[in-house]
Image (cartoon, rainbow over all chains, first blue to last red; front, side, top):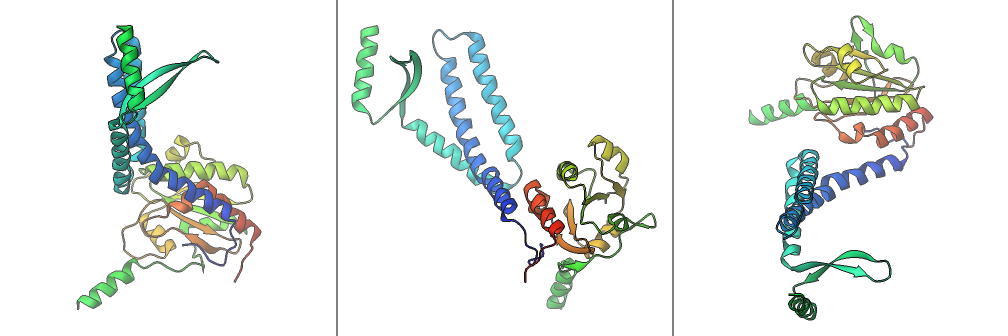
Amino acid sequence: MVDKTLLISPNGLFLFHLKQLFWAYVFPVFMGLFSVVSVQVYSRVGSVRDIKMHTAFLCASTAAMINLWGWSHMIRTPAMIPFYGCGVGLAAAMMSRMFAIVQQQRTRWKVKVPRVIWKGNRAEIEAMKARMQRAA
Amino acid sequence: MLLIALLSAAAAIAQAPVPRPAGALFIDGKDVLARAAGRPAVLAMVSTQCGHCAAVARVMQAESADFSTVFFAAVTMDEGADPTAWSQKLSLSFPVYKGNREVAMKFLGLTDAHLGTPQMVYLDRAGVIRAQSERLGTPMLQASDYMRSLVGALLKGSYGR
């Protein structure tokens, strides 16, 4: 309860609600999304043929630590549960539409950039299969 | 009978209105608010076992460094609390008093009801309560951004209609 006659600068209220919005609604969605994506990524990294043991260990342990940190910050009120669920659902839906992640080398900068090949992109999938056959 | 019971229950948890002149806050026979001496004051009624109370104490500590003309204080409400140890643990430079639930309830204008901690009270220079937590707590009054705005307004003493 705040005295309504008191002339308070709106900045404080705006910042408070902005932070509340992030931590109460955006952060749980992000954590749900991150949980699913990180689990899928490190399980796939672990199954790569020539993966180094310490790379697999670092990937999995970092993802697990970030997840646990997120959950410890997130479990404040049951109101956050549906938002977390939305994040998990969104990530699962996104991953279900994904065919592969390839590393494409940029000729100009000589850096490898990860690129997603979606299931709907038939031409790209066929090209990728042809590349894999040639490599085999 | 049911109606009477419901009305009496509602009356029991009803809060005193804001703004209102603050009553004295006697701890060990001394009025804590006398130390404010014409300055705006930020009071936190805390429990030393509560994590949110520790968080708000840290916010108050940070704000007290910026607002030296404002009186910041905390009053413990839990049984067996050690305000000195709590203050040392959190490195607080503002005073922490050993109170109790009855003293806090009386000051907050509440009768027998479940109380969320921390309970924040903001007073102007004249000792009028201008903002107070709701019975189960008001996170807005514990946030540093809003505390800063509210304290700024109390220092300016600007009021509309």
